[in-house]
Image 1: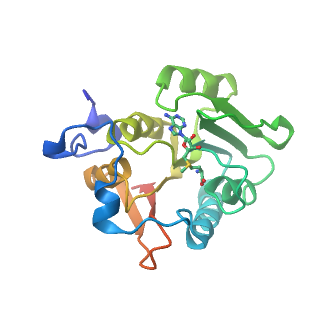
Image 2: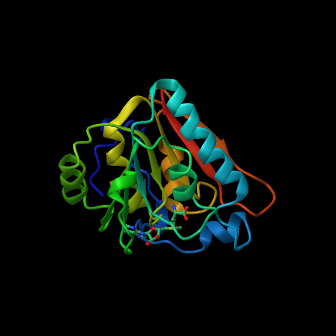
Length: 207
Ligand SMILES: C[S@@+](CC[C@H](N)C(=O)[O-])C[C@H]1O[C@@H](n2cnc3c(N)ncnc32)[C@H](O)[C@@H]1O
């Protein structure tokens, strides 16, 4: 992918080296690192997400959240952690290719679309009057190319804001993205659990 990596605070464009298929999402990292399990989003991931919403709030306010990959049906999910912790006035904007029920009264806005479609997502964000996000949670399709497209949304991150990525111990996109972060631009907090009930979660803050 032709990618202006410097513009997005990266040291290089992440790739899979000789495997050379940045759209794939297969098990090579899963097999290498951890066994499969049913609890990808662990209780600890849930706790960390809630805590991060509070930290962002204390750092300068959590007024708008963008989540890529939405799950309202599971009580232990990033979506649930965010919407049960944010202030009512904070706008939640979720994007997923699967349908979801919007709840405008609760400031829960939803776009059913491919999260990598910058034009569509940015047009929708603008139409809702949002210019900055204080939390961006990336948890959609985890290939390298898809995560790179979604990483462009970090241009909208407020100075005190945080980007969270799920599956940072497992899937090619988040794993390679973290390796490419420019430490002069970003401060990385990785939470890699060792009980196998977890696929890894990370917080990326602006320096
Ligand atoms: C692992 S789930 C994550 C949901 C939620 N963050 C959670 O904590 O459970 C991944 C989600 O990404 C969505 N997804 C996958 N590829 C996508 C794409 N190209 N565009 C938008 N959403 C996508 C799937 O429909 C699914 O709901």
